[in-house]
Amino acid sequence: MKSVTSRAENAVLIKEFIRAGEALGLDDIELSAILDDHVFTIMLIRQGNQLLQLGPEARSRALLLIHLHQSLLAVLGNEQNARNWLCSHNNGLRGRPCDLITFHAGLEQVVQYLAANRAFI
Image 1: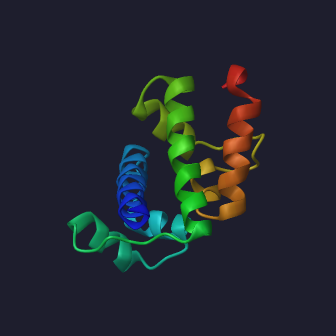
Image 2: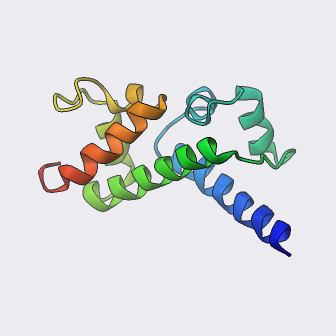
C-alpha cells in the first residue's frame, strides 16, 4: 500500500508544482531547470503522458517552488503581483528573483529572503 500512497503523493506534488509554476508565469524551460530535468519531461507531464518520479532533490525543489508561490500570494495578495515581484530587480537579492529560482541555491535564497522580509515586501 505504501507504493500506491507514494505514487498518489507524487502525483499531487507534480500537479501542484506545475500549477505554482504556471501561476508564477514560468515556462517549461524554467520549470525543468528548477527540477534539474529535461524540458521534454515537463512537456510530457503537462500532456498527462508521464508520471514523473521525483528523486529527493527534485522533490525538495518542487516543494520550495510551491512554498514560494504560497508565500508570494500571502504577502502580495494575487498572482499578478507575485509575477511582477518575481520579474522585478530586487536589491536585497542582487537580481531578479525569476532568474535566481532556476538554480537550487537561488530558489532557496529567494524563499529565505521572503521569510525574513515578509513585512517589508
